[in-house]
Image (tube, protein in one colour):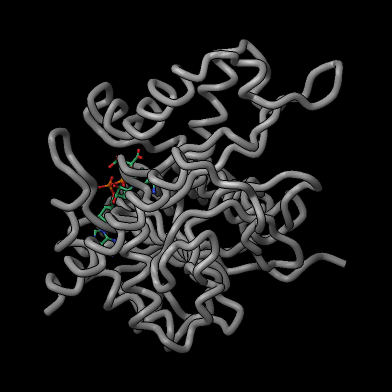
Length: 332
Ligand SMILES: NC(=O)c1ccc[n+]([C@@H]2O[C@H](COP(=O)([O-])OP(=O)(O)OC[C@H]3O[C@@H](n4cnc5c(N)ncnc54)[C@H](O)[C@@H]3O)[C@@H](O)[C@H]2O)c1
Ligand SMILES: O=C(O)C[C@H](O)C(=O)O
């Protein structure tokens, strides 16, 4: 029997990530090739005409899985009945700006969208915040939507995770699909800690540690980390626009693994509400290694953390605590 359609909201749908993301969702990349979807697209009035153009193209693409498109500038209409919300709407960082510069503009959007989602979305709503500052926007959303379970609110660090896989694959000239279990800890910002201490590569002799195969700790502890941390800025410098196709693809990976489950023996990185695991302060949205099954994620427990890593986990937690305070000061 055909499945009932899932309603997926994309905010900022007239923007560049939105333009890359909505066809992926309509093709089944996010929820599977047998899952019909109804797309809810929200943007603000100045972008209404462009948003309508996106809707026209979705109709023109004749996606078999796409059962309807609601394109609107009305937050209530956009959020009504949605099962999944991918929140991309906001102001992106431009060349030379730090994420903190976009804080004030964005957290107030997330406060108001929290209320709309709380009132109008489906009871099983899962939220992915993409717009920066992604962790802190997600935290504000959580705090201003107290009836949405905290386990249903997340932010995107899968792009950073995928970037780390990509760097290892390039360095060793191996298939990216043979690299797994890197971790992004902390903030989706330049303080994030891309950690390869538990990462492995599939070889003809079984799985081998990334550290052993790379055999260059100076690179792994230095340039590798800074390349992943600074990749967003490098894309902005090259494109004069922030990453879009890779962000859209990562958003699909994030929701797919959350809803359909992570492969056996594999974890991914998700920004989720901290419960104090790994001595990360509770009450932050922090990126952890997670596995998922039956639509629920779980933080991978018990990984040994060495002294080098500990400092980096703490540094990015510190930044998130400061962002939280700054967000509240912007809202008051
Ligand atoms: N977490 C990540 O990995 C990651 C990666 C790339 C980009 N980003 C962030 O994603 C966001 C979107 O990036 P983009 O390049 O698509 O930007 P963009 O400017 O092209 O698109 C943003 C869209 O949001 C709309 N918008 C603004 N306020 C809104 C509101 N209140 N409600 C609904 N829509 C609203 C704008 O009109 C615009 O169409 C930015 O904040 C960017 O920094 C995050
Ligand atoms: O760095 C940015 O602001 C853009 C985005 O978050 C990215 O990681 O590409």
